[in-house]
Image 1: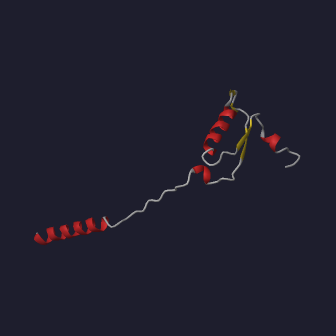
Image 2: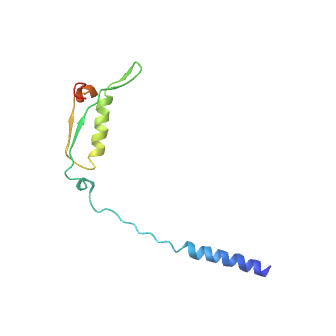
Image 3: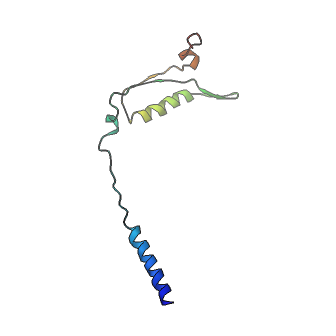
Length: 97
């Protein structure tokens, strides 16, 4: 019985000492997000409003542009938008495809 307790103690001691040997190094970027991609420029095209069945969601295209602009501003300030809704067919005409 004495040997069994010693064996459990040795296993617990081995687990305790090897479990504490891991070390971690945390690094952070000291660079503001705007400087990561200083030459990036975006032109956002407002999509047409969303539809599901007979339900049209007014201003949903504008809301998409607002959300994209908010997220892209973390990377660059050079963001332009086309405020008029544009369809895919207007961007890529069938004649050129």
